[in-house]
Length: 274
Image (tube, rainbow, N blue to C red; front, side, top):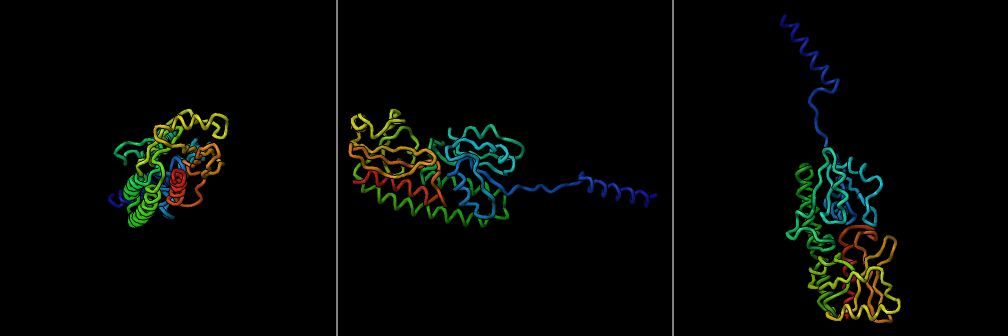
């Protein structure tokens, strides 16, 4: 009788294992997502080739048509926590973990915080801690890459400080607060004037309007966010306006995060320069 019971018990265990009813190992996906390209670039800097990093939005910040499907394949979705990607909260599903990078910043997440090297470093730290906890076997790699990223940010920040400190003005005009966090890193002031949005800076009357708006800070530098497909650069116009076209969402990024952001802020430093 005991032998029969042992045979039956063994048969049940084998049957459960074959049918999938037995204990299972939970497999964590090796895909992580960033809601917008700059966030994905920071995540890539920390993850390296150990994980696949994907971005959920296009160059205009709007979600891709297959964004929900991309989320379903992810272990983690890193969000800015700003209004640019509020759409991502509607895509929460299953075991996918959503991490708001605003938790890394003392001041919350004002628009454009990813454009500040100081804030980007804080966000990278939260990413590293999150990945260390989820993939402990890769912790050494993440920690090493984070250290390299921090050093790159520090060096770029130092170069930008030297550039901005010699600038001829300490302020610029903009249609919104996108570049406010970056400006704050270098003691610059942003004169937000919604009337700049859609204004033809070469058109009749543009010079007088810009001069009026910037009179308090004695600046005629105008920062414009380029549309997808547009070009970045600085244009010193014959009407006295200095137009600085910048890429806030990584549309022009061809490689790593740090060189891309340093280039944008170097253009700003050039625009306000003497």
